[in-house]
Length: 338
Image (cartoon, rainbow, N blue to C red):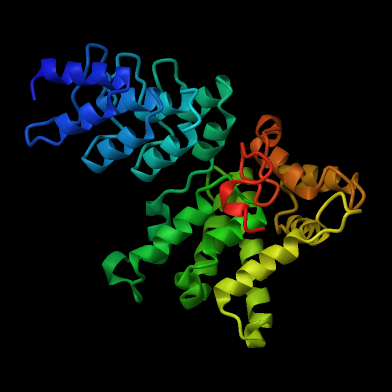
């Protein structure tokens, strides 16, 4: 594809002509990494315009998420991070899944997460800061590569990745992510082991990460309690996926007089207090904050967690009343069953 054709594709993306762009790129001689006069790739423009359909198409057809030809050093993840589109969080996730580097900086030495926070895209900043790569998980699951003692299916690593990469740590959301997965029940011991190793790695590496450590501990605690509930009710005649839903409903149970969900509050308070690294400043501040609120009163433990892990601004976003999903009104679409 000629440079002129490449430039015209950039213009079509700017105008929102997605179908025309996809049609042109479906030809054999197309170049998904063509540049405009500023060094922007097609993926860069699609990210900046907040076009998730085109972003996914480009990534599937070989677009480089780490191209750094832009004259100011901006990359696709940076453009997605500063785009004021409601689809920006999903675009950031797609780029990260495709291998976008979170530590890359632009000409003013800013990362994508720093730029997202600067322009008020706090969910994007949290998604980027809380990312764990598939490669990190693979190193734990298969420490000797193809020569490892046991080889697990690709779906196993993918599920661990989906569970740990997110900033959405509400217990009900975690349960939703695993309830219908046969992988969890088949490889439950290894599943918990891998997440435990990821957790331990955060504070034992040269660059410790208290936020990531506590986040993974909460996820691990919820998974352990969920599986414990399934084990305790194994003779009920219900399948594991049904029991996960029963446990979710148990956590959500509250009376008309309750200000918080007591079972959920108990789970989160216990998870926080059982965090093994008591010297952590984040742990100390959370425990002190929660201690000031009598059980059953607001703010609840989840609010403290969101604020401590992801900052006041993200915690102030509207949350799904059921699963804690960010930017949801009352209940998100997946939670209507409750």
